[in-house]
Length: 108
Figure 1 (cartoon, one colour):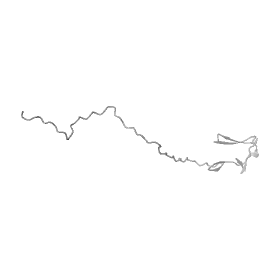
Figure 2 (cartoon, one colour):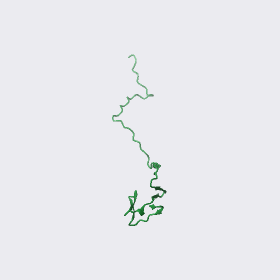
Figure 3 (cartoon, one colour):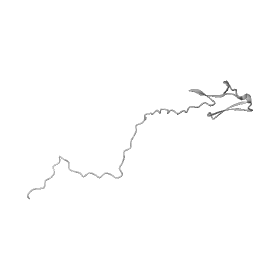
Figure 4 (cartoon, one colour):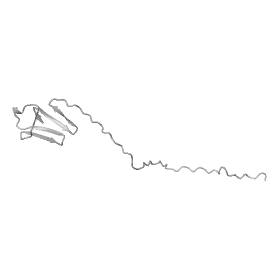
């Protein structure tokens, strides 16, 4: 926090608070005419910071999607086969193709 571009030192008169790392406030106890001025809050994180002054329009920030890393499987993937509930009918047996069939005797 700063007042007229000078850093505000926390004291019994100026109380600076952070709530859950999301909300910041400056409380002025026993406000007087001497406390009038331009107050500024500077916000900064590990990527940088911006300064917003009273009356500034804060830009709308849209989150950027984080790329997902897909890891290949470490074991073989087994795909289950569909089993039918009823067994398939057995095929009628036919004689082997190279086997001779007995012909009925003639004219007896």
